[in-house]
Length: 100
Image 1 (cartoon, rainbow, N blue to C red):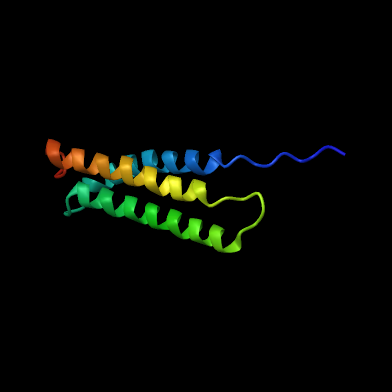
Image 2 (tube, rainbow, N blue to C red; image 1 turned 45 degrees about the horizontal axis):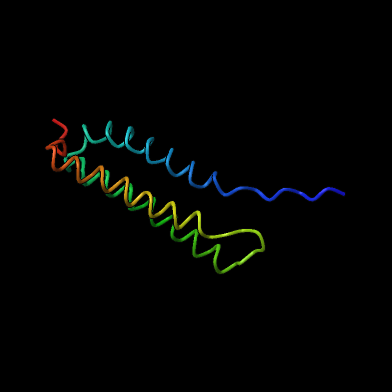
């Protein structure tokens, strides 16, 4: 009997980075119709994504199933913090936060 291969956790990172890209497009389009600055809208969306990843990582730590790790969720939260909030700060510094 052949051993079953363990699933690779790359899908968590890939999905989160794709979600950052999709959120940038959607929030950029939505930012044109909302009175709040686009950088604040982006920061709120990315904060929700970070909190969801942290909660999923903590749930994974508490359940502690063999062969499953919480590391991809925490790494995804860190990457969203770095990429997402770095983009928000670049928007503010470049003066793109008003989206006029």
